[in-house]
Every structure is written in structure tokens, then in C-alpha cells.
Image (cartoon, rainbow, N blue to C red; front, side, top):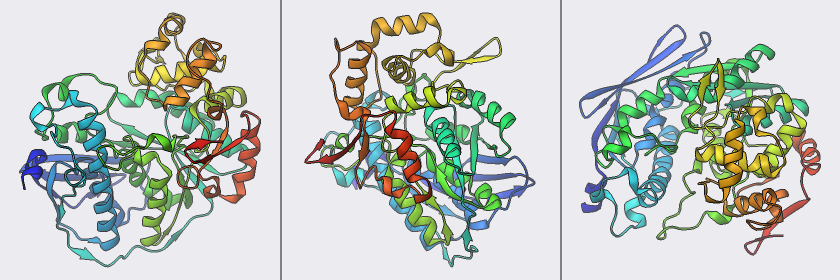
Length: 460
């Protein structure tokens, strides 16, 4: 059909059976006849269940759901695996269609930008021509410990501090992409490795996989493949790749909960675009995604919980708690798209959209950005230009932070930004394990201005 031809870039992807050698699992794809490779390396040999390894190599393809006609494999998967992939591919196609093509046209050739956007065109899934087999996974139930997907960002650092304080057994797990992205996480990883016995790492070539796959997408222009940008041209299904890659650690150490440390995102921002349902490109950071992950793993026999301890508080409040309650962890933060090395130290660029958000939150809280290696001149320049900078923040969170920073001269006061949010669909504190829930809320109340809930489109 004509609408499908618009995005069709890859006729067929064939996924070959992954191979295990020691602590490395590697796999290959035939993409219209060309070979694309992907590897994961663990700190030591880990239990690798056949079905789980296969999913590790299928999930990355969800990122390209809008552009692939057919996906096949030389191995069978379970019906639950297929249903999960198909559902995620439809959701991801909508996310890419709206948030990468309609809203960020600079990556795409003009002829591929829809003239009459519609939900039918956006809601695409490739043909999944897999053989289906019975689920042979042994049932799994953990020992209560937590797998915390970790980085150099405030979310994972604060999640670690909070969960350790309330008494949880936490495993910080870092996914080390083979390229420069590791710089943002290396400071925190080295500290955790020295100071905790539970720190783990997965090294992967997933960034190389993305680069090769992007080169196959005809809709992308030359700039998308060569220019620097603080966002990916296509990839919006990134965290699931990390989650499936750490399943061997989860099984080996008996972890019961998976955390990503996602913060509050205002559900009022999730508006339809041309009647297309989407989540501003952050579906894999929403509570809805956590619920789907828990449902999928339950279907395959894994008793795993998925939630974030931070979903009820904003980034502004996160930085307040992190710097005031856990200063040693705060010093590790490197939230930047372009970290660089000077004199053996990792420094943020001070200019990208990620840095803009961090600087805004810190200065709005009267905190010192130089503690996390922002240079004095970058801070001074930000104070002069904060009104004109680009932020990837909810509108009211941005406005309120500017209001605090400028002492009321700029922005707008939105007091709910400093409150604890409750919304059953998007930030339900009841999803937090009851062992930790009340203890976490007791901590939050000391750094916020009370609680709020959504009623008739307003936080009250």
C-alpha cells in the first residue's frame, strides 16, 4: 500500500542464533543481505537461558519497527515473546512517527515527511514470521534484591541513595556502550566499583549496531548519519535493550525488582498528535511501560517487579534531595550528551539540552554546579542566557524552575512542581514495594511542599 511504501527501507531482517563464548554472547543479523553484528560481554560467565538470549537480540530491532517490512529468525520464540514484540513495535512506530519525523524534521528527507499524518500510517508493525515454540524457561523468583540500571545521571544516583537508606539490597548495573557515551557513567561506575561489592557491568556494541542500522534507513538524510546532535535520529526503545541485557545478572543473583529511576513526567503533556496516541518519545520511561514489562515477565514465568521510587517527584526536587541528603553521590553526576576529559577528569559540556536542565535545577535550588565539574564560566553564561536556552523539560517544571532562579522575575510559579504527585495511571506510589513505600514518602515530605493529585486536568 502507498503509505507503507513511504517508510519502507529494509525488506527483511534475518536474526541468526546467538553464540556464547565464555562471558561474551554475540549475534548477527542479515539486513537485506548485509551483515550487522551485536555483542554483549559480562563481568564473568553468567547463566544464559536460550529464550532470554534470543530476546536480547530481537528487542533492539523494535527501534526500527517503522522501517522494516519483515523480521525472521533461524530459531523459534514463544507466543509471549512474539506478542510482546508486536505490541512494542506498534507503540514504537507511533513514537518515532510523531516525535522523530513529524516534530524533528531535520533528520529526514523531505519526501518521507507525511503530508497527511494519520494513525493508520503510524501504527505499523513488521511481519514477524517466527516459528512458535513452548516456553521452556524455568520459573524464576528472586530473593528481594534490586537491579538498578545505573548511569551518571541524577535519577539512578538518587535511586541508589534512597534505596540503600531504606534498607534494600541494591545492585547498580551499568551498561557500557562501546562508544563515547560511557563517559557520562564512568565517574559513577568507578566510585561504585570501589565502594560497593554489588556493582556490575555489561559491555555492548549496541551503539555500533544502531549506527549500522541507521545507515540502512532511506528516510534519513546525510546530516542524520554524520552531524552531532543531542538526540538520536531514530532510537526511542533504548532502555528495554538494557533491561533484556541484564537478565542474566538478574537470574544469577536472584534479583526481584528492576529499577530505572524514572522521574515525574506530567501526563497532561501526553496529548494526541493528529489523533495519534504517543508519549513524547519517552514511552520506555513511563509507568505504563513498567506495567507492560511486569506483565510480560510474569507470562514467561519470571516473578519480577518494575517500578521507580522517583516517579512522583520532579527533577527539580530530585536534585534538591540528591545534593542535600547524599552529597557524596551528587558529586558523581555527569548528565551531559557531550562529556569530555580534561586532566583525567570528566567534564560536562555546559551547553547541551541535558546540561541546560541540570544547571536550571541546581541554580533554582541555590546549589553549586561546580561541585559536579561545571566550569565557573559555563555557570555564569547560563545565568545570562537561561531564558533563551533549549530544554527537554515539562513546560510547568521549566517555568517554575526559572521562577525560582530569577526570584520571580521570569517564568511562572507552579507550586505542584515542588510537591509529591499521585496519579494512578502515570505516577502511582502504590506500585512501590510496601516494604519501602512509607519510608520513601517520609524522606520526600522533608524536601517538598506537600502532596497533590490530578483532578479535572489540574494538580490540586
